[in-house]
Image (cartoon, rainbow over all chains, first blue to last red; front, side, top):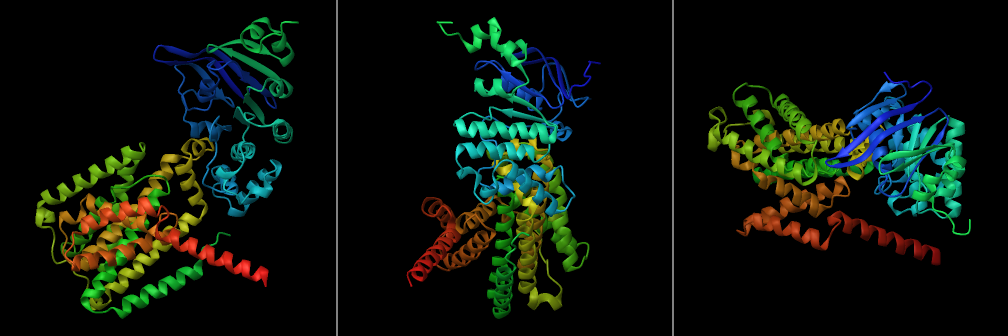
Length: 248
Length: 313
């Protein structure tokens, strides 16, 4: 039995192998209540594989996974999501041919199943309002600009009112204004709903700003864990991922 | 509240019933029944398209429905309406078993499995002694008092089921079904059991296919394995594609249009298979949204010109 005290999501010694390729190994991860944890690393570091393991899309070839205290190693995505861990995808995390309203309504379907339609609709509308999508409810999601589509995909996931929200590069392709408003939304989700967030992000400035802690992956293994200031100062992280200016 | 377009349904229903009352002579009545059955089949095929799958097994379930009705009427002496419901239920139960195994796959794989199932069922029908082997079953008559009203009953039953399909599509379950088509992964991540809903959708569609099969058995009085080959599925696909798959009205329109045109083609001695094949090709090449798409765009244009005139005036 692993020690998962206080942690909502905990992975111990997680490993995923694709034939001869070891995509993720020796990964210990903990996410605490109300925390925003960043998962960073260069391309091919195993961030998306980690996400797929945590959300049940890949069965780990080794290690253990606990979600809210329950063993979920190898559980299906549906089961893990019903436990309270909901994720978004890097690409196309919405239903392009449906309206924004129906997209967000989908998020309420399981959790509020058996409840009245009005209840679901009001949850969807409340979610849309929080994300600033109220004016786009009747628009077809696939026709919206990229930034709004990202918000819709967060909206679908957040409409389930998860305990843990895993966001795969939510800020990619957003301009400065869009990114900062998206960050505000994430802050609000964390503070108002006590939702913990696991974030994969390439936008280092934004990630450093919002994350409480960070895990740096390289070749599928964690090479550093800690608060953003420590990560920024970590020599190994600098040499592998962040880089250094010549004049400093 | 979802907009169920009740008025359009009532107008359409009354028209359909009046048509079936008007054409009471034997031949015309059989065409009316064929049209109603074709429309129900098109609605059923399109319903499975909501989850993004092309259901070529539909012909097998029509066959299962028809043979169930045959067995129920000629061997078990079950009454007409009960036999029809029973046929739907048999098709539905088999579809739940078939669906829970095969709907784990999707796309071209599911299509091929459906195709294979249809052929397997056809061969099974033609080998079973009790089902009359290749010559099929005969003497599937509706009760005497219903003889003159058979086409009307067929129209009413098909209308009820088509409206049920439409209501499900418009309800919140419709959102789940369309989400599965658009993005099954996201649907899974919000806690929806995708396989369960796929099977549910498939079984509802198969119930309708079974009922359609039973109606076909009663209106033809004779069934044979050849009636339920994959060609039937191709015909139904033609109804949906030509009519337009964006709405259920399109599928109904396609069925009405092609069945009537098919009758016309038969009277000219043309091979209807070539006719249906070319109908699909023409629809896919020149009218992607089908007939209903053209109708909607014409209505849209009229509205735009009208508003433009009003704003000028």
